[in-house]
Amino acid sequence: MEAILKHKLSVTTVIITLLSAVVVFTVLKYKRRIRKASEALHYMNISIVTNEETCNSAVTIIRRKCAYQNAIGFDCEWVTVGRKRQPVALLQLSTLDGFCGLFRLNQMKTVPSSLKALLEDNTIYKVGVSPSDDAKYLFHDWGPKLKSSLDVRHLARACGYSAGGLASLSEALLQITLDKHWKVRCSDWEAEQLTDRQIVYAAADAHVAIKIFAKLIREFTSRARGFYWHTGKMGKDSQQDVNDLCRDIADVAFKTKHNSNQKTNGKKDKIVKKEDIVISKRYPYLTRTKPLYNNCYLQAPDGELLCTCDKKKALWYVEKELGAVVSEAPLTVRLRFEPAGRSVGAVGRYYQLAKENKCVVCGSTDSYIRKNVVPREYRKYFPEVMKDHSSHDVVLLCVRCHQLSNTLDLRMREMLARKCHAPLASGKAEHSCDFNTRKIRSLARALLYQSQSLPEARRRKLEEVLLHHYPQCEVITQELLQEAAATSPEVAIKKEEESHGMKVVEYHLKHEGLLRLEEYWREHFLTSMEPKCMPELWSIKHNEERLRVRFEEGRLSQKDLQSIGLASWI
Image (spheres, rainbow, N blue to C red):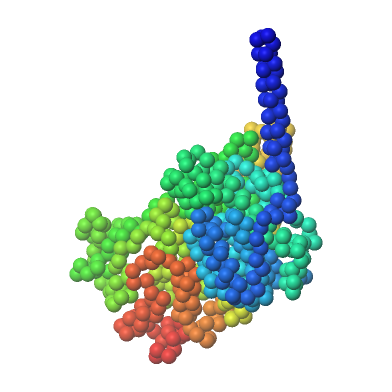
């Protein structure tokens, strides 16, 4: 009897175990099923904002609800008419718990200060897919400078997932299918009343973005102890990991071409680093590996300090026997001739100050790139008297700040284009192409870099063509291949008379003077980037002060003043 009972119990246990497995499998299958956004996101609380009062209320709610995560979903919609983009009509912001504000900018006609402050708050990440593009349009159309935008594809790549669009990420990570039918994507976002389908579509895009962000952040920090991101409870180490990751990829555009060519072979990628992400359209950003400022000193013959300079320049005076080293640490060189001018006033003291090797905007010292505050496309048309001492307008920026600054410079260029009747499209280089030279370059590179993998017959054919092109050579050499491979088949022909930069310079020379054009760019840099670490005594009116000193010392001719547009000084 006891044996029978034990057998029955064992059979019952097996049945219960099997039933439990079936239930768990069914539940998991139910949870993992692909659902439409309208079904999966039914809990969303959507607020349509059409005036400043409702805007202020929505912004207050968003700030309160995102206080733990410091992130919100972000997206924009606009209308395209005849292939021309109209101003951004709708701005979507969503919190993780489902509150979504749809800000109808076309009806508000302006961006209220509360919304502008939220968009420019660099402590709150605005997450989405290609948010930097939307940020550029938003800035161009309405003025707010979106800060801390974050493309979730960076996180997807960091966690080892394929970095597709928002719809594919939503389906892969959240099992939610977004409505991407062209009829709603290309619908009238400036309509008097949005349809229910438009409202759900717009809100879902922003909300799915923050949900994807949350999921990827949870996965990224799953190794850390005591982490519950959605409740705001996070271990100190986990919080630091998240902050470090997000800070490095904020405001950095995601380059799909760079990422699509990489094969993971089923393995997860390493954590993305800043230098792996930032890739320009044609060349990678070249960050400096050595300090720009060596802070060596140049002295006048009587020992008066003239300026700081780099080591190479200081030693040049020594090598030419124009100066002598008077101190090794720091390196100080005393000139053996009287310089053309001495340091006078604040403008002179600027060149005497030691300068720091760090980003002038955020203070980062990891890597930096030179930034021309007054772009070269304008400065190259300045008279020589204004090109002297141009180091004042060369500052250091980290990779992220450099990219952001270049993006914001577009607004300034467009303003100058309208004001000076100098279209940005003009002055583009025209290219004439020697197709025969292109062919020779191509086969030379094949022989130079792929010779081992080429079939013997193919290799001989290429060598024959190359030798025919270079009849003076009897054999193929490494030097010949390198020369042929480096040959450029394109010759750029730029029409200087149509140059945007030249037209802007000519306009200011006739109307406001070139000093004012410099000041416009310096003011733009200060207001758009809000740098925290600018060099001491850096001044918007630096060149005017410097030239006034030279004028008072009699070192400016009438011709010099006329070339700058300062005939009034005469």
